[in-house]
Image (cartoon, rainbow, N blue to C red):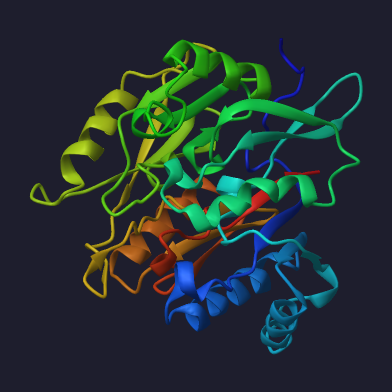
Length: 341
């Protein structure tokens, strides 16, 4: 049975955006914590003039460290709210609530709770993230149970009925082996108010999520997506991204209109300490008045920023250096979760 709510597009107005401050050196950061914090500060400097920023911290010590770092920046402290909640990691897109809205008879905001199993039970110490949403100060909003394992980074929506995802994640036996593809689609439709589900193949090399769509293809308006492509035919990403592009060319949104497709480059293979990272320009965050885009000090940064600026003429597109943040196997979109107004 449908809830009557829908998942809004990311470009719809935000009340604020949620983050979990980086702190877990043992599980995630291993010498890269300072760099991750610096990226967060840059993000907050860009967001706080336009919307509230909610920050989860595990304890008072981490809160003090975060505040000491932020207070030296241009971020607007008055638009920051801290909440003491243990999360295990920063990737709130995946363990956090997914917000939904109802437009009539009056505008309402609610949230959906899904099971988080630490990316297919890969990281036992991070399973604590599953408990975080129910500890967040959103109990005044209606809550709906999603009824399956789902990470927010594995889906993207246009806000009017169409959802994008990848087979490599949602059909992975490490997520919901007891559910068929049809049953998974039914749960997404019931909880998120979508009617049309588009399946891409897989994600990019180095992605420990098994291939989240927010590193691959994103809606930029109701009927247009940007999708990353790899020009080097010898690169590990070439074939899978070509397969995704091929599928996109046959896809239609919920009205039957064909998708419009724009392409983003892939940065050159990004290696940190001998390990390939899932660096992608698709992991951007659309916020009130701004779009924050991960960049990697490569020539392709300029192309990606220019492409996205054309997609969002009414917003300022800003590059955030994510060379350290990507060490944790994610970027700006993975580290954030917007709450609609």
